[in-house]
Image 1 (tube, rainbow, N blue to C red):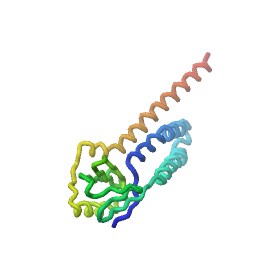
Image 2: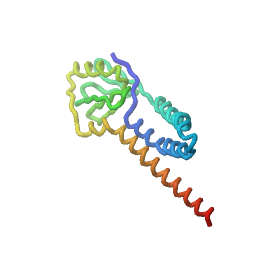
Image 3: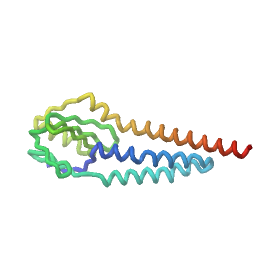
Image 4: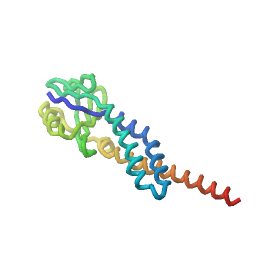
Length: 173
């Protein structure tokens, strides 16, 4: 039996995108203070980011891999219902486990220290490993968050510059 803490992929991505505007606006506001910019990045932006990570940690779920089933947050999945699985390491501390069952797909982030043990468990149960085209997207989707932060930050910065220019034009008149 293997017990571990896990995070539902869809919940984590949803939370990340919901907090995206907050982090971007804080970063833009911090960058507007020219002389204190780097100090504010290291304090205010880092504190905001840390708060987001703490909120995500609260969303952890318990997973239990037993002889006949896998329990994911009180939902029991029989091993006979699992059609295939795939694992990869998209993040430094967590690996991704994708299970395709008769009822749908489950995608979890689990601590990387459990990866070998879980892969051995799944191989011993004769569940086939199968990589799908969607697995590549799942693996690299956390990177899309970084690009989204850049674009939202750029948008906030452009709005900030436009307002600043309008204020300067008003002062000139």
